[in-house]
Structure formats: C-alpha cells, structure tokens
Image 1 (cartoon, rainbow, N blue to C red):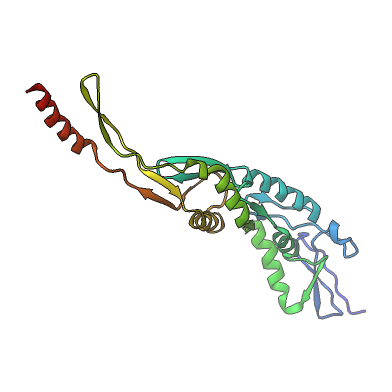
Image 2 (image 1 turned 180 degrees about the horizontal axis):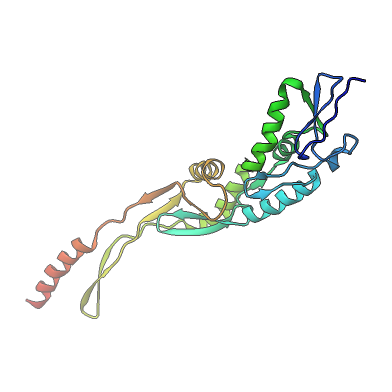
Length: 239
C-alpha cells in the first residue's frame, strides 16, 4: 500500500501519517477522551505549582489550594509610625486562573494534536524543550477595590490620631516637658489606589507591606525650644 512504518526509539517522537499532509503528536491521551480527562504535558508549571499530568479538574484544585495559601498572607499597612496587618483575602485578592489552566491544557495538544507537516519539527522541538526546561505560566489575581476600602475602614481609620503639641507644665514646683506627637489622618481614596496598585503590579505572594496615603500634621513646639524656656523659667524661680 506504499505505507512505510518504522518503530521509533522513543514514545516522544511523533508518528507520520503517510497518506495525509498531517502529523499526529502522541501526547498519551486518546482522541476520544472527554475534555475533562485530557492531561497536561509534563514539565508545565503555573508559577510554583507543577501541573504535569493533571486533568483540568485536578489543575483547578491545585491552583485553588495555592490561591488559598497566597491570599492568606499578611499585608502590613503602614500609617506613619503605626501599622496593622490584613490578609490579602480581606483586601479582596482573588484568583481566576481558568485561562492559565486552558493555556496549560493546550500546550502542544488538543487531544492528540494534529498539526501541519511543516510544523512537525516544531512539535518535536516543543517536547524536547519541555524536557530540558520547564514551561512557567503566570498565575492571575484580581483585586476588588471595594474590599480594599472596607478593610481600610475596618482596620486603619481607627488609627487616625489627633496632633498633640509639645507642652511645658509645672508639677510639684518643677517644670516638665510633655512630648508632642504628629497628627495622622488616613486619605482613604488615595490609600485605596496605593493598595490596589501594589497588589496588582508589585506583590506576587508572601508577606507584603504598603505605605498608605496619609495626611501628617506636625506638632507645635519641640523638646529643644521648651528646654530653653524651662531653663529661663528655672533661673527665675531660683532668683
């Protein structure tokens, strides 16, 4: 019938279909396998999660577990010299990685991938490349701004502090200096923007830290100024 067959040395080498202009790349998955039973090729990762040999459902479970871990990390929110920790989940971080899973499922296969003969060499190179170097796909996370705002109102508004000026008081015949403190007021809109931008473009996973947008009011007076006044008043009392 003019068809030549040759036993291949490795299962990874695709087989030519001589009577067509196509090549079938054997991915170890039957053409008749239901969509949910197709498996991801080996050496494919979604960041640190190894998706090798997983079905779509298994990959979804694995990435959900990783997502729960990531959103459990604490993000420390700083307001001048004060801070509080909030989980990424409370800040509205969620993961929708269906696209990442589809991408992983489609790498090098759609069932048993049938590709044009001129892509045959590319198919071989793809599998060989995966054996030499893992394919790393990105995880995707979204941030809900309303959740960010709610978290700020819950944990940070309470940290607002009125300014306290330096004072010189006299107790039991002695002058004492009362230290001042800067006033700190959360700028809610600006802080929502800063936290959202940080979570979407800077933070990946692990503990995080953000300096919130705050308004600072400096106290009147200082230790140095009141120390001089204290010295003058002290001399007057002595004289």
